Amino acid sequence: MKLLKLDEILQPAVDGGYAVPAFNFWSFAGITAAVDAAEAEKSPVIVQAIQPVVEYFSPDLVVAMFKRALTGKDIPVALHLDHGTDPAFLFQCVKAGFSSVMFDASSLPYEKNVANTRDVVSLCHMIGMKVESEIGHVGSQGAGDVTNYTDPEVALHFARETGVDALALSVGTSHSMPQQNAKIRFDIIDQVASELSIPLVLHGSTGVADKDYDRLDASHISKINIGTALGKAYLNRIYEIIENKDGVPFLPLINTMEGESSKSVQAVAQHKIRLLHSNGKASLY
Ligand SMILES: [Zn+2]
Image (cartoon, rainbow, N blue to C red; front, top):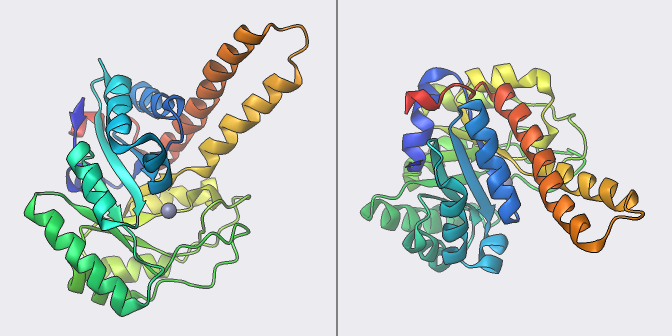
């Protein structure tokens, strides 16, 4: 595997008009599904987990599972902490072997967000680590009822004050959207990109309509987080298997659930890779 830092995996996407998929995982099957999808599509990939998931496994165990899933795979990849909120825990992840981190203080008042993010970024830069952060809180309204759009002027100020290496904007999506009905504010993306050269990040992509991806990929959005769509694929397949379980012995049933749910996640991941136009881009690294 080619283990890359955040800037190393995103810069070719900024230059090349595609976006790198950042797949969230909750289990070992989630990691293997993301990695197998990337290998099948010859795509770079960011494998990531939110802080509570990493806390549950421990940073060391996540790194061990990641290395196991990548054994024998020749793909450009980053292991990323998503929505890290505790600086001490973030540095534990770096020490364990994560190659990329997000520090998220976006729920704090603006000045506190700037001060805390600046501290984390400067410490990370001392050890060569790059940092994603967020401005204009991407919430979890679920239904896509987004009102807290990023103010482009505030985004520019935040980026300059903190020195972040990639910036997540709130442009019309929210986490865990049930339908692909987000109204993306491309004007905000374009305005920020016209004055800021760092890669931009989209969270909550499960709410993005397939037709909007071409324009997103061509923009400065170069990391797109994909979590809910994978979680749904995983659970829906398990529900199907359990519904049709009559006569199947216990152990084969469990084995079927693991393997089949992982295949469902991989299929969705491959579809998203093609929407992001990152398929075939592994050779650029
Ligand atoms: Zn997010």
